[in-house]
Image (tube, rainbow, N blue to C red; front, side):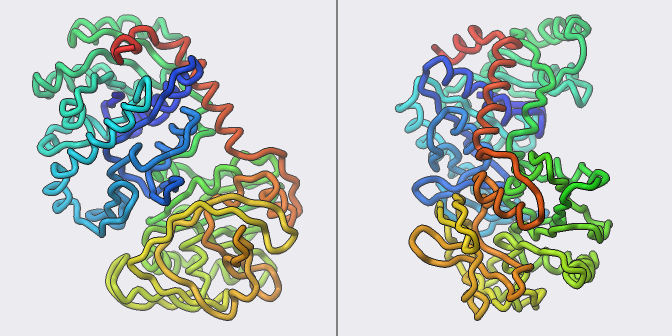
Length: 482
């Protein structure tokens, strides 16, 4: 189990890289994360949902993702509450305080899921969450040491040197952890090092001296990790749009409830495209070729945010200038006439007026649609694959001109009469090279060939090769009992 000295220390990437490394050695490998918190989710073949990072880790193992790989998923809906997903199925909304009281009851579920994976694999590589040194959360823990001790899984603790104070982080963890928790840690590693590794030899030796844990190596800054889907939208909040240059300009407002933002990874990788998220406090630039309204976990609240930021005014000015707009999932719902939430699925019950750019309306419900899909673009016929993950049903005259035709013949989404405004529920529209090329061609941009998952595969192999050189993999294999 890879645990860390904090959030965003690189645990997801390390697990993905180790999964690919051991898979490349011919082993049957499975990823596992007992509890995740993310609005970037993925669909499993059996119609469940798990954290996007575990789906990438499954790809690293060269296996299909399953709900057992992430049995507990929290999808934040506010600063103090989240939707709870257990073994791929929505279990309602919970406040942070209420979940703290319930989570201990989910430990048995996490261990059962882990045991199933353990029974089909040579090695299961587990990812922790946050830090085990957050001892105020230790009671009832299922994400770190609570799980590790219950399942008997040895731990490697990762420290992030890019943040600084990595010596204090590792030594401090040893100081505050319960001795029985500390006994689970069989070694440490340093992540995200830049520069000459010899410069930190003394620091590593001091960590060994003060903790007694074996030093398993130091991983350099992994540039290839940028090509993997991010799990946490915090990395987007810390970014700012670059100067957009003279390429095709695609922009998306950065909603507070932003979900499934890996939809845009293929656009980031396109040489002919300048893609940027526009953060709160900045207007939508007037030189965009396409504005995409992304998915949202809190669609009505984010629509209110869009108006509070004045982005609705910017968007309508963009449309008057002849610009194009694409809505994905929640963004598609916003483009319609109204969004009704009579049962209070995403907040207080009520109805919010939409942007009125598509002749459709949406009603949210307790049923959540979760399914992989495939089909073709209604205009031009380019093939796509993707998935649906949404609550709500959209109706209205606009559906007579769909954006997509699914493989079963059903239409999905809507397109305005002039063809410049469009929306659909399907995530992953830019993954397939054919569909991406067709969508970008409408903007006058040429797309590089190939499907985006193949680019992710190349990045995973690069990361695995770096870990092979940087870490004592034989020692890690012995810790895992291989």
